[in-house]
Amino acid sequence: MKKMIYPLNYNCRELINHFGILGDDESIKLVVKDNSKKYFDEFAKACKSSRCNISNEFEKILNNVDELILVNGTNIEDYLDKIKLAKDKGKKIFAVPSVMDLLSEIKIHQDIIGLDSDVAIERFEQAEDNQEIFEIDVPVIAVMGVGPNCDKFSCELYLRKYYEELGYKVLQFGSKEIAPLFGFSSLPEFVLDSKIPIKDRIVYFNHFIVEQIRREQPDIIIIGSPDGIVPLSLSIHNNYGESSLIISSAIAIDYMVVGIYFDEDLQDEFFEYLDNCVKYKYNSEMISVCISNTTYEPTAESFGKKVKYYHLDTENICEQLAINKKDKVLCNIHDLATMKLMADTSLKLLQENIDIVL
Image (cartoon, rainbow, N blue to C red):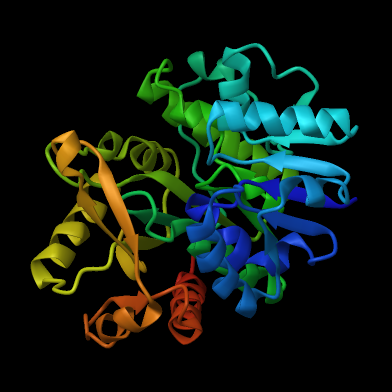
């Protein structure tokens, strides 16, 4: 089955960087919005190294595929236009949860298939009667970050590939809703459901993981958290790290990677701050730090309540990676040597833990 993913945009750039996991250029087509010349030119450069092609000719590509997959990244009018075209041509239509929610609000989600996890997500209501937190006897790697757009999902994908190539069976829950496109589940929706008390979500998630371990019998678990672990400012609070707190309270984390934004002047005090946050709030240890190609600044027009993100070339990151942070492994997703060092370090640490069999 040939598939088109639309609209390719910066928030799902992993579709390019890890295109080989998705398939090949014959079976998967990536399409940007018709008027997105900026994205088209930028992504066209990135495609040279990932061996995929992109297009901004939606209808032309639609004629040659069987399925349309809608991801987050455009407005409702554009979705409606593209859905009509696809339906008229008899194409099967899929959508990620955020797009399904948007379409559901205006009652046009019929005949559109939700791109949800293959895993059956039970609510585990029995947790109301059983509040016990069970120990997890499978090693857990967590990928967290100081906010969105700091390459957490790319780290998750790299670690998945690394461990699978070594022959380990991976149970994984991703920080982005496009995770099912890469063959694993996104984080269960109940973890992010603010209508459920946090204490119940912690118990639900613990019981959920225990059940998935029973079903899948994995060698290792990799979990990505969508929220930031710390507020970026007094007005940009990243949900105060709610999802990360739920994850780390539900299961013990054996190895943590923390994604951070690029900063020309990373101070020791910043690493100490993150160290203390991870240790005392999330009951873990920050061993690896992934320095993103993204930097940010609060927008003036929103009085600091919103953020603008800027993508940088990899060359800007090289000096940061050369910094000696003693017990920290610094990496960047575009520097494969540092990424391998990060993954090798995780494997070595887990193997040295006598309570974990890897």
